[in-house]
Image (cartoon, rainbow, N blue to C red; front, top):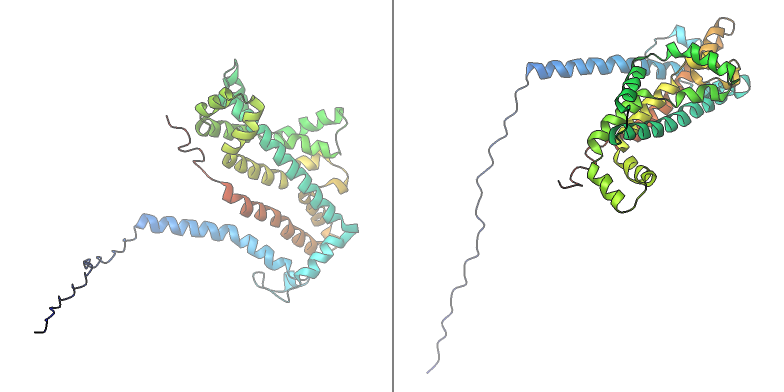
Length: 306
């Protein structure tokens, strides 16, 4: 007798459940208000970018092509040779103006940001007599135009023999009432009192708390203050005009005006003025592009559990 073997059939493979097809997405209808908002923003962008585009085009032209060709298109571009003449004119005076502007704007913006952070943090987190009165004086400084202070500053600095010096422009530039106001508002909402109390319990001094903890938490506001102050000092014209009399200490803004005024006698200075204005825009654009990624909000959100 031969043994018969029975084979059991293999189990059928499991099939994954078939999900029903996703319904087609419905395109949201464009609202008239949204279309109007986009159109207004587009017109505003064009309005602000047209002068920049013209400046880029004009910086590539020769002095004769500025008036003999279409203003919004290139005509035999020669940007590098134009910039070379700008930097080499009058014993490289434009390079001296650029270094002066970097000194005034860079040092002034950094010091103004630190002072604004310290004053804003103190007004927000410390309780002392006269705090609100000091804050109201700061608000008054925000409303007061800087041109109204130029003449009193000149008279005061002339008594101290600081006119026609770098200090005559640097010292007024480190004061930013708007920066103090912004830092106080930001510190009140972004710096938790529990974090400060925990740091004090751990034995940290007030200076260490400010430099290692508060400055990091307030970094978005500090970047904003720095950019505002940097742009303000870089574009400042009236204060250097009042304080300075030696052209080697001029910033770019004041130096370009002197070139423009002398263009009647020296026509080539018209092209030099345009090329210098083109170069002066580059540091502002670079600072904006580099520092915009630090504009973060909610840096301490969730760090303290109430």
